[in-house]
Image (cartoon, rainbow, N blue to C red; front, side):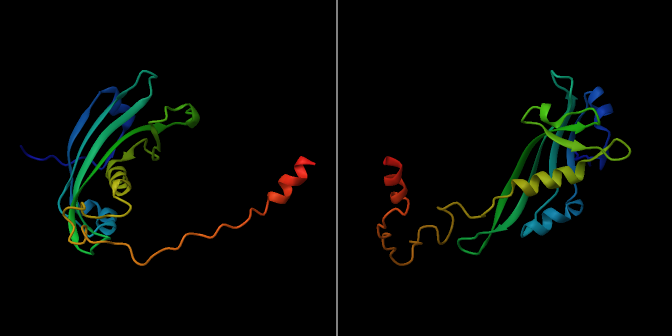
Length: 173
């Protein structure tokens, strides 16, 4: 099956009225920030998007994105492959939309001057947010995963009297 390139910009309102689904790719070259955030993007980003209306008649864009990236293990310093996955739900913000009334799962997104959203930027942002904070191999695959990683002995803290104990005694009087 041939991979279809996703459009860069989409009008979410019109697309939701037509109940369109997009399944395709975003080329690796269109994801420079994701490339910089990792040790390398291994291929194109796969994404599937569904536009529609929810029970509150809000325009929504639900989607998933997947990318294979190289990360540097913070335990051993070696590079490993990680499948970065992101799920998201967005709703466009209009002048009459109150952000506090939106369901908690919905992320508000602003439209540009043409009433469109940048799909490539949204997908790139979501994948960057889905990266692990501290990338590490699984323990059983890491060369240093089975090693004892504690250094030295930590002495227990000595018990000091509570400085507010005096206030407790004054409160009793």
